[in-house]
Length: 101
Image (tube, rainbow, N blue to C red):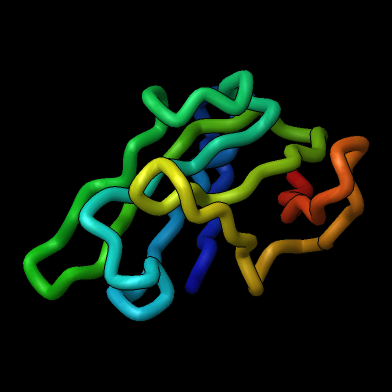
């Protein structure tokens, strides 16, 4: 798993790129990134499947904020990002990954 952050000079956002290997994605046919930045909606930030079975996606997020998120593989398997800035317990009893910008 990997996260790359690139601050944009033209506006107050950071481009955050997410990448998962085939194994990290649990050999899924599809993966989405869900979080408080998209109302936890798995239809908004769907990751692109690459030829090698890995997945990638980039999202522009407002600077100076923290965002809770998780991955959803095949609409049923929820998992966290190991390289997130933090891991925080949610109000629903799960652990969320957090990205800090």
